[in-house]
Image 1: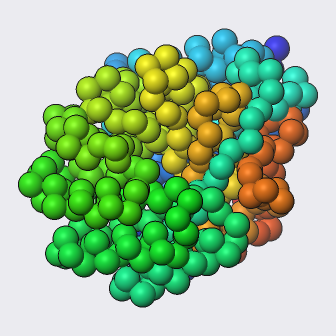
Image 2: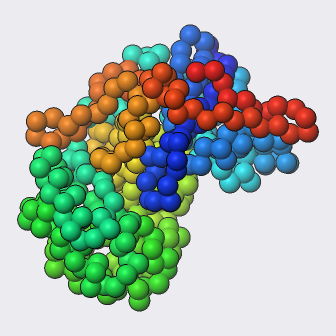
Length: 392
């Protein structure tokens, strides 16, 4: 039986990381080897902190480095992936970066297992087939309504049937200015497309700041308002959800484990739960949330704003669901997020998105492409080197 022999982390970054809501400026690729098999994953979190949680010295029995529960473990089945994840969470319970680091490892385990058994991951998850998704162009609001209009027009010209506008100036200025942005977005994408709005937790938990924006969202028929508040502000979510109807609340990308996501579904009044496989602990918990959401009539949506390896990993957990139709598709990626993989997920002639039906995740890393973004890191404690950037 193959056992996990090594896990390597590759911290890649743009030469300059800007203070903007763009998650494609750096990433952490994960290479996992068991016997002759190799799998790849990606973490959506601060790369350096995730590496540190892999190698950090033990603090006590529930605060061990993540690697202690992974290296040497047998990996031959889906049950092994779940067993390893459970072990990691038990042994590193007090290490708050655990699920972020585990995310990349879990994705890599699924990728490896799919290659080992010659099956795409969604079939290993129990789905008989995959369904096409309606991707939404995921962009930042322009600095001005005129810039937002141009971005919306571009999404429409590129045959997107949905577009999401987020962060930027939205929620920071007056409700009147925000309304101009929403009007511009609707004008640009056309009357029939899904208009999605992401407030980026700008109002924290203050309903009074969010409330004046609802009129424009209703007038221009937004499908959802995403993350008006922090993930834990369940009461604020639930109250605003009642007042915003028919506009629905969306949230969940800040969920770092299954229980946080379930609380959003059960108590926040959301209509859409958005899960990032690179944050919540990987494909395994993402699949569990997708199943839970369907049982409770909440639509599951992936959250992804990095490479197409991360994008594909985020789509497998709900690939076989016929009802969860929409998916995120970032269109303003930095070159890093594009260059680190050899292949990408392209939309078909109808603008729909399907996974590559290859074994595993279906996306292969481009190591030469990643090399120019590689950050050299060394972690030394007490004179001993715990981590050094591996050769690529």
